[in-house]
Length: 128
Image (cartoon, rainbow, N blue to C red; front, side, top):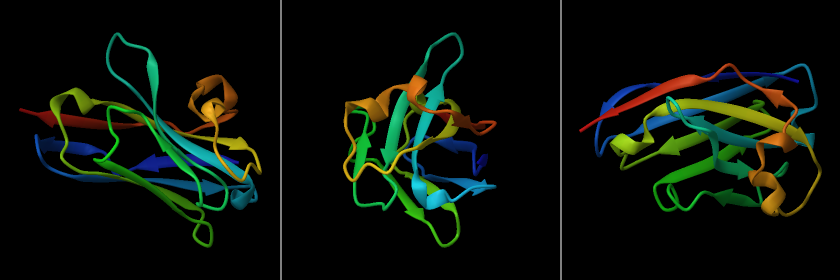
């Protein structure tokens, strides 16, 4: 499956952005999808994940309560709604997919090594 991330941009602290991950070339509903982010000079970190049906999701503590991940399998898209953005959210955001039919996400969903398909990344910049 091929992934295309979009929706990044520049926003002031407290603002919102909506990222989209569009998939093609596979049966999207068989994949767990996650968002990771990478700030300059730092590791690529887990942000959020959602299972194949959308019934199970997980968030990094740093974004819990501010970000919401959702999916529309009919449209082959996963969306990350980001509210109350902070300067520390500034990073390149990547969507990734793992061929998993897990009904419930576990800690494994937070590991980037688990994901074999990656999008190209979209820049999010939050100014104070």
